[in-house]
Image 1 (cartoon, rainbow, N blue to C red):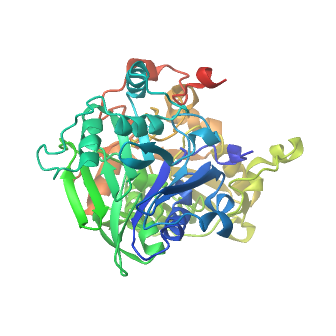
Image 2 (tube, helix red, strand yellow):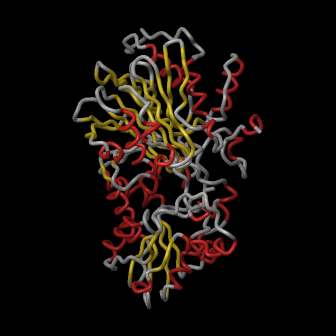
Image 3 (cartoon, rainbow, N blue to C red):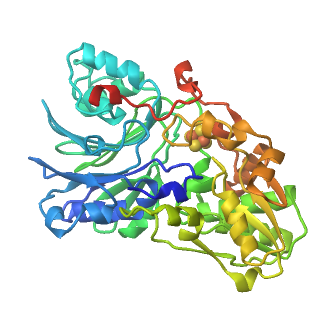
Length: 494
Ligand code: SF4
């Protein structure tokens, strides 16, 4: 049981992936610690698959990385190649059969796939596979990817074609990219190589690092590289296929990248603050969002408080720009994220108090600016404001370092449905009244774009569809149904 009703007002992270090529090293251990540092991207399941050039090994299970793995099940994962994944389900429900990586045997040996993202044409691709007689054992779009690579529609996909050096896996990946739509950052395991692949828009992040001892790692975020002592080399480019094997690094064009659309929510909330994208540390970008928010939405107050931990950098930025002191106003139980113990009815009433406590000594008699990074459903802001009032604050002004979330995400983030999004149903004054703030303001869309561009030092294409409704890819009509939740195929599985 996940008591995430306490953090239900955040979009749920997508997934974290790693791929490791490291002869002479314990690759499963490297993959484990890589996944460990990407835990924030997915907490439902975790898995690692390895290859020793002959056979492949896998272990996966439900729960956190540290719950799924121990010395006994890590030891048999031998080899010099590994992929791993932390999962939060966006397509397919939360069952072991959907846990990743997917590992199958193919005509060219083992094939493992770890996927972060969401294909928007999964239904069509599934149907085509099933029509060709390819069976599927789960409701995950990642299994669809795996089977499309194992049994491409064009089985004669020509590896000699332009620039693929006769690499039959690269040819299969390219033929998958020709028909796939949506978001995918992939770590793919074969008998002799790891492939890292990013969709042509670069919706989900993926970066490359080098190990001092020789070998390479790819990971969703650079924080995973530092954890295992690797040096950041560069981001995997949108539309690129990168091969890591005994020949070193080889880059192939998978599909040309017409424009870029990295998820801007990575900067707002998802990524760990010590990771960097597009050359900038996320913490600094978040401070810039806070600064812009202070310029756009000033208010007289005594202290600036961030909702811990995710809004702390935004609050520091607001404080620096406004010259209003930053102060800790809430403490958070960092270990409450996931538990199998269900709170009873009395504890449910306590609500956010299970997770946050007010720091009364800092709040007493103060006019507080409460900074949050985002409000999605609007069900925790009200109790948090009440907690701060209970701590002695005389006024609570809420400032949100992102625009109102008015649209769902179909590219790998469980944002909520139209029906659940508070900013889809209400205007800002309505939300203010609902949450009981003395005032409420959000960062504008222009302010968000400007602040990110200022922080990273360039204008780069980003997806901001959950704020603007402007999706960077065609979204099938049926996905816009008001109460559409995750794209699931549960009727097939009961
Ligand atoms: S819709 Fe929002 S959460 Fe989804 S990819 Fe775009 S910016 Fe990210």
